Length: 234
Image 1 (cartoon, rainbow, N blue to C red):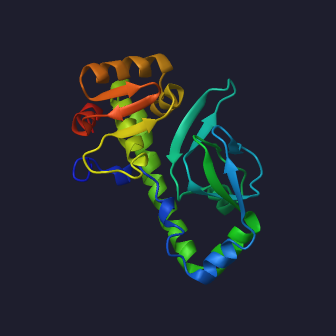
Image 2: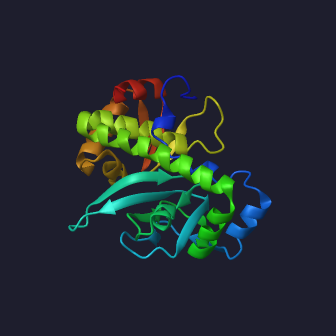
Image 3: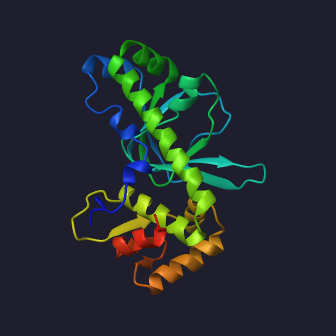
């Protein structure tokens, strides 16, 4: 079921998927001049926080998580990226090291684009530079909403909202009327919702008893998206 008209997903989702869409052929050629295609296994790290940015990553298939890690090793997932999205370009645009880490959530195909080619493409392409500016502006709105979420919502509401958002990312090959399967570990869900794993397990059990979703191993199948949105109290 579509959530259009039920939930403003655009306020919770980055738009880097549109950056390379229909980019002029000349600009795309410059950007991809020395690309390196690779297959990354589930859990493989693309880049680490504070590392020097040698390039950006284009996720052609699969999913990845962006996260921060504290000195005790606890991770806070900032965002789940879907196929078609770019990762790592913030550091290059700011001239700083990577502000966060990224790792693939499942076996994924990734294109690495060297830093020099990305900078040259941005310099030459008005279309690319304009899209990057628009995307960065939108991401600020998304991150602001996320900060408000953690400050104002209960664990149940936070988890419900994150499930709504993540569900949209698992709607590949989606047939209307069919349930959507979310394949995400309880630890990653806990990191997304900013809570302990035990709270996630308990809240998922509550949602299951209420008929909102069902679970099959680590997979979560949303049965009633309307009630899940209501549980988010957005």
